[in-house]
Every structure is written in C-alpha cells, then in structure tokens.
Image (cartoon, rainbow, N blue to C red; front, top):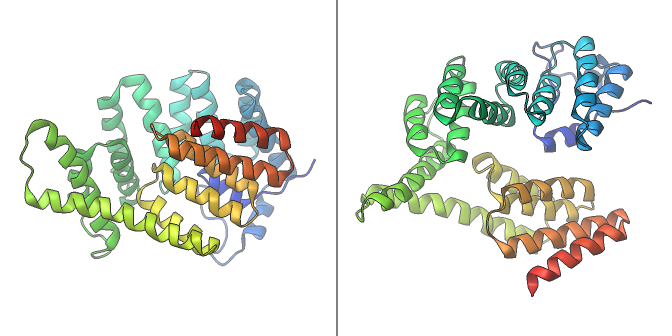
Length: 316
C-alpha cells in the first residue's frame, strides 16, 4: 500500500520528519523532499503509528527498526522509538533514542519534553534537569527549548537564570518581554507562599503576564465571532508558541478547524486540550461539544452522540 506524508498532520502531532543533515536546497518543495522516502519506508512508518495507537508497542518497535535501517538519520523514527520504549517502561532504551532526536533536531520542543520525562522517571527531577542542561550547552536553539521546558513545568527560578544568560540574542523582542513577564508571574506565586509582601516590579510583571494571555483570549474570541477562522488560527499559533501547555488555546484551535470544516485536525487539537485540562468543567464541556461537532461532520453519529451526552452531563 502506498502512503503519502501529510505535513499538516505531522505538525499537529508535534514533529515533522527532518533528516539530521540537510539533503536539499532550501527552495526545494515538500513534495520533492518526500521523494527521499520510499514506499517501503512510508508503509512501515504508518503501520508503526497504527500499532502504537492500539498499544501494540513491540510490533511498532519492530516496524520502526525497519524504518531505521532504511533511513538511519531520521529523527522522527528515533522519537517514535523512544515513545514506544517508554510505553513499555524500557526507559533506558527510550532515553537513547530520544537523546538522538533532541541532539539533531533541537528546534522541536516535544522531543525535549519527552526526553526530560524519561530522565525524570529514571533519575528523578534534579538529575533530569542536570542532564538536559548539559545537552542545552550544544547550541542556543537547545537553550531556547530548555527555557520553554522550564516555563511549562513551572521551574521559574531556573527559567529566569537561563533567560538572563540568553539575553536578547536577536535584539529586544516582544517574545522576550512576555517570557520574562511569565517567569516573574510564576515567581510572584511562589513568593506569596513565603511572604505577604511582593516587590512592586514583580507584581507589575505578573500583571503583564496575565494580560498577555487575556489579550490573546480576547483577540481570538473576536475572530471567532467574525468567523475569521484563518486569522484565528494564526493568533492561536502565536499564543501556543508562548504558552504551549495552555488548554484554552488548543480548544480555540479545534474550534477554528471545525469552522474550516477540518474535523480530523479539530479532533487532534481537542485531544491535546484534554491532556492539558486541569479542573475546568466549563472548558471540558466545550471540548466535548466541539468533538461532537467534528464527529458529526465526519458522519460518525455514534461518537457524536457519545460526546454530546458527556457535554450534557457536565451541564447538569
């Protein structure tokens, strides 16, 4: 069976197939680059994803090893091997493959996140931080992703130290200002538990951090009310670059895809939203309503009804 890669699908999953070494000119289109991958490789790879989806991890690993023999420098294969070994609780094997993926594709946040999770399982949080910090010494791109990791896991003090080290590599930017505001907002919450007095500078930055999220939410809602789904998606993507663990933005992404009649992409975004959801019944109800809408578009009335019922239970 012949498969064709969907770049949009890979981006939504958090990674894009990228060889360790540049193998074509930058101007080359995605379609031309895909010629590097044989039908045999594609068949093994997609079958491995299918087997992983039904929790048949051993079979998925065997298929991915076949992919590895065909494309030994492919980071997506290393990442998937790491994921499957992790699922089997073979953490040492998982770490080997995930390290390769991060080392040669440092711009992918999810690779680093999974590597950290694996190190944390093996050695504990402190040792995991030490390991990824050593890896981050390789390049500024590695450091940028480490900063994102610290921000998303609430390691505010470590994030601030790293941000001060990085400085404004490309000049002062709104991204740096927002990152600093977010860090100081996290620090303000830590300080509240230690003291009733919070420095005015931190209070100001904390408010700025909250305002950044609020401003994105407001802008996204405005585009939703206008049914400007393409513009809405662009805003959501900007927001997710700063706050990749914010469930609300994945919900908005799912709503935009539903509006664009792209139910499969909507379901993928909404599934991620559920992963990041914490004690928010209203948002959970919206997720189920949107999932019901997506399944209705796909013609799957059984699943549409299932999620409608879940949403109704949360409304009671």
